[in-house]
Length: 488
Image (tube, rainbow, N blue to C red):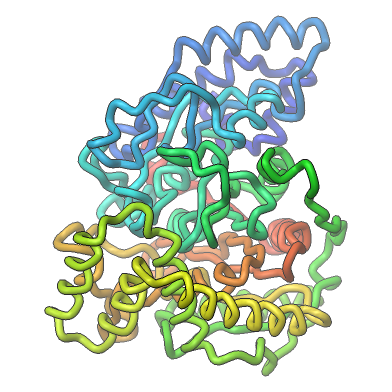
């Protein structure tokens, strides 16, 4: 049964419908996988196995009667710890929230269960979801399955690590600063940041605000592009507070071949240089796209000032996080940045932290800039289907939990850059609410996975998904981590 956990959720569901596989056997296979790999990876940090087993046996009987709850009938799933599951703790990694037990399911979990998924567990996060590493005082550190001395990414690091090791069939995470895309890139799986607001984030919180947080979105992670689309279709939909007047209107995209796509390129930027080996891999990927007939449009990118665009994002993403910080904490962060006396840290980290306490008047000015830039992207996508960029500046880095995040640096091409400089590739599409899919393109530097980021026009979520599906069919996709081969 060990191989079944690495099959796509779509194939697992098909086997259940054909009565070739029982939901009860499938979930036991996933429990076995967790028992085998989780002690070393520490991705799954909460489980309710007994309830899941009872539900799986009930679903066995439903299958025998020819009854199916939906397209995910019997599929075992975990979700990011920040999503409410009735009866489970939602802590965001903060010991102060250790006894915060959810009374209801988040919208995403509710929709997944209605589609037949067995949501049995939660995966690890960093404190308050603001790291590209995944560790906290409650649940400890999550390791990257490709190299346990490295981060799986964050803040959906547990999600990506669990997926890549076959401990779950699908996952759901959240993304304001690449918190889905970055772990997908680091762990070699697929991740999607949908268009802003098209997936409800209700119940992905400690205290419900009844509105979407600026920039942040809820989206799926999967081992295949097909599964990513299936999960997105399952969770898509606005918050109930908005559905009295609005509904999503996302055009379908049924393209199957890469030669049907027009692809623009932005593979590097001075704001966040890309590590040489990764850049070469991206360039090889572009060459492979061209070989199978994709139309590559060179020397055309959105006509905006990327530095100003990045600073605007940092200020706005800082403002979106403000509810999690007291003014005293904000002052300490800014003082800490100033004490380092480093120009890059002050410009990047300082801009983000100053955004934590900006006035509404200043926010409106930043929002004006953002909307002007959205229109620039809209114009760009009039005759381009996909803008291809890096997911980050490098593959997964070594664990580094020393000091605050703003004091940590990564070495890219022999030069030191603030770790937060890589947020450039998050905010490039994120601040203007565009859909982005990250998918694997292979490994570099002694088997560390890396991925592409495929950005589509506003509301063109299915175009990004169609592109990822075509890449997977024609050029390949997920690879099982070496750790799993060693223990199989």
